[in-house]
Amino acid sequence: MTKYNDEKLAWMMLLDGCFILQFIHSSVREEDMSNLLRNHEISLVELDLFLLENQIPFVILRLIFEGAQFKDGSRTKYMINRFVADRNGILPAGYGKGLPQLPEESSHLLHLMGIALLGGKDKIPNKNPKQLRFTRQSFLHVMEFRAAGISLRPSNRGFLTNISFESNLFRGSLKVTQITIDEFTHTRCLNILAYEMCSEGPDDYAVTSYISFLGSLIDDADDVKELRSRHILCNFLGSDEEVARIFHEIANNLVDPAIYQEIEVLIQKHSYNRLNTNMNYALYYRCSAPGSVIAFIAALLMLYLAMMQTDFPLPSHKSK
Image 1 (cartoon, rainbow, N blue to C red):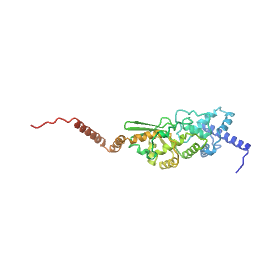
Image 2: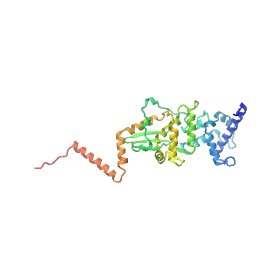
Image 3: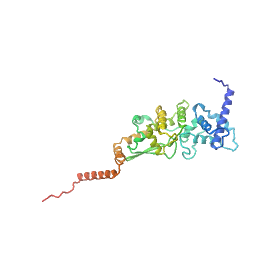
Image 4: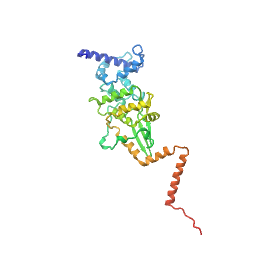
């Protein structure tokens, strides 16, 4: 193994840092880099910049860009934030309302990406799991939501923290952050999750909990197809089976820190309500055939009239 002294290590960090800043500047400004890199090489560089083993301490980048000035007067800090937010590989481009306010202190670019996925929040609050009763083994998959009267919708803002559930009478609504799945999603997810597992990583495991929650919704390709039809999942892999396999590979081996456990409990309570289940089963399965809706309404009307006659018997005419 090559040995580095302090001077060689400093030069290597300086050169790598300068390359990263110039690459970020050119990418954000959409400058032509064909004289230096081919298109596939640009994609590979963007992927390599967010590998855990390739991270350069952000303090080094700050030392470089604080003393540097681009010819066009671009603000380097804004360029870095814009680059990380647009190339996170998980959330769709242009999500949310404007660029999230990223904190001053961050360890490296991968840490900054994790913060961008949370909408600029370094940590998100966690409920005490001991106060909640929840059984993950019995949690519903996406294709089982219809029978429970639960609809799926993309959340208004595209950050991982924007997951909510509302239950109204017989219907429930689950809003989930829209995500993108492409050939780089697997690698980026694994690197963010690996960083959250490090002793120096964030202790809230926010991305880990989101991936675990979404993985619990997906059992097979039909679940992925339903998420696509609800505009929650954008599949650029082309195969729903491959997306399901990726989530099984990532989520099945995670220890869920249960940030979204309260939402999961609300979903279970709604689905365990027998009245909700029976009503939605009748509406979505018994009333799917032509004419069955009219028959169902007629049956309810006959049942109502029968109950009224039981409580208030109609007068009968006695024959003389």
